[in-house]
Image 1: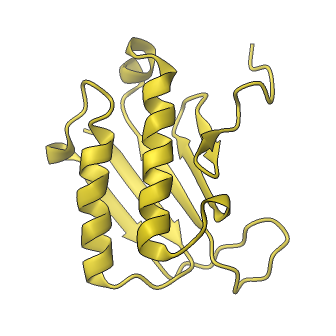
Image 2: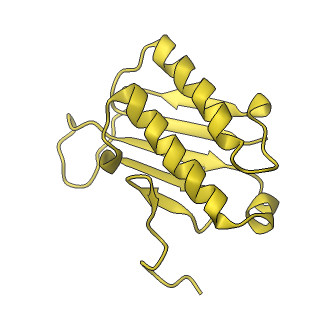
Length: 127
């Protein structure tokens, strides 16, 4: 069962949270073995969050995506990059936060995104 946790320092009403969750159910299905029907979604708004050196009033968000480890080993990372780009776009759409203020990652994987793009590709060597 995949799990997504979104934390943001902006307020999101129930309707926006629900619409965000529905779109995330579709986005997780980019990974061939995942199903949005069993996606666990947690959205925490109005959290105390800071991004870089900005003050506490600057809007930002983080997206924590978790799937079982075997899924990472089975599929090409292009699927995970696409999921992170979609999740970033979805959070941006419903929160009004620009993509360059959203940090996303797959838990326990070499796939971390900033502004919807995998930042580990070519950035550092993990071998």
